[in-house]
Length: 187
Ligand code: ATP
Ligand code: MG
Image (cartoon, rainbow, N blue to C red; front, side, top):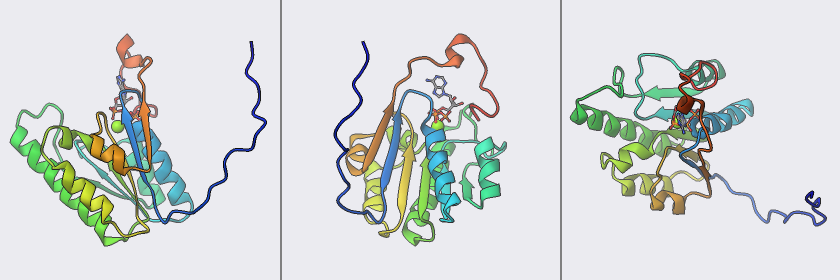
């Protein structure tokens, strides 16, 4: 049995938005890569893009960070030296708050057309950064600033605020079969 091709034209858009809020959440692979895809699109159009990465060590550079440098994307990693192995949760929380302070400035200053908050949901889940602060900063943003958020378990308030929400589902992942993260594919 095969599906029928669509015979009706899709609904026409009725208006243009000055900016959008896009949220990539869920357990499947592709949240950060989707956000970087948007960053690449925007940069390709000559738009100004900022990425603030939460919860990542600044000691090594992912492929997306190296590519972003070539595209003139402003990249902030707060928490130089922090890793998932850190046992110092107070320090991790302080780093997350510093990252949020930086992100809040990036959003409010209006110097970028797109601000990516990568892995922003984790400090919200762990209570290190108040979700209400993030919601307010995004709601009060300059009209032209689009915000792209990633991370698992996005809180309901962010899902409500976002114009576009994708929940990725983990059908399978090579990691579960014992395959190490692969350069160029996973980082
Ligand atoms: P990516 O950066 O590949 O788009 P992601 O942002 O959706 O992934 P994260 O939870 O941020 O997912 O995880 C980042 C790293 O973990 C990446 O190397 C990614 O390939 C890997 N990963 C993502 N989803 C899974 C999963 N369901 N099981 C195991 N590893 C995963
Ligand atoms: Mg990610």
